[in-house]
Image (cartoon, rainbow, N blue to C red):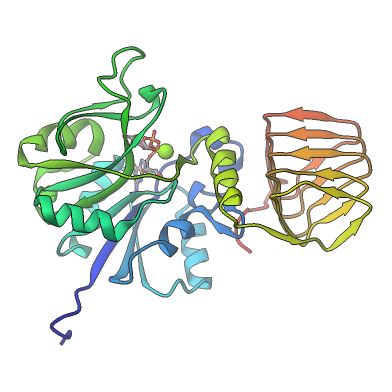
Length: 335
Ligand code: GDD
Ligand code: MG
């Protein structure tokens, strides 16, 4: 029996998308396992969960074997349940598909969000308002790539998923972090269902509330978002300077350099270089990630690039805003 005063809670992470906007990186590594500094993207979410969350349910589909492999090897201090969808069921279908693992009020996350959200405060807000669900909200300049809400006080009165440019009714977007009551499950029909397009607009009258927060928020699902998330973490002090070899190089912080070799190069700010990566003589690298074993030759300029594991940038190259496919068979984020 559980002690009377301790409540346990479940968190659901939607992690079955194909990560198409991060191809070619996501052709060999599922988006939730792509490394953001020292750990896979999804671990940033898991590590931010309140202590009362004892079980993490991951709704998976695309490359589920790699996710399973990761969680078999890495103990994240909580029970982890992976629930597979043979065919992706959409964000709503994915929630319905795990209903047997949910009991009371639960947290739900898009698996590609990095934020400073205080989940305990959001839970308290949800309990105060007593609705069927609470959505974290974030203000952006161009809301057209997101879900947009209209509010009356704290109550959401309109939900528009990815409105056409100029049609958004506000600049407040769905940040992809939710608190839901189990009653929400009754509003998700079987099959492929979008939470945002088919469920939220139908439950507004059951009380859907918007919780706003400060700090930072990034959707890492695009190359620009991925690098912005890396930058946000570095700006908040998640830095490291532990090169394997450093010969006459200039480091302009903040950076995260872990076991990479640097010779006669200029690195930073906002560079992440993971074990086995290397940067050669006379190269300049800024705002980029070098995954495990990625190599930049001599005399290169690399800016705003995502270099997959084992990739090679030839001597004298100038690259900007590129994502390079990993060497065949290499996966990222599994260290
Ligand atoms: N299990 C499962 N099955 N997961 C899925 C599926 C599916 O069929 N489809 C998508 N997901 C997961 C993705 O892996 C991701 O973690 C999350 O659901 C959201 O999907 P994205 O593809 O990243 O959606 P988005 O970024 O275009 O839009 C969503 O996020 C925005 C905030 O970043 C929406 O929720 C928007 O309303 C929101 O503003
Ligand atoms: Mg996304």
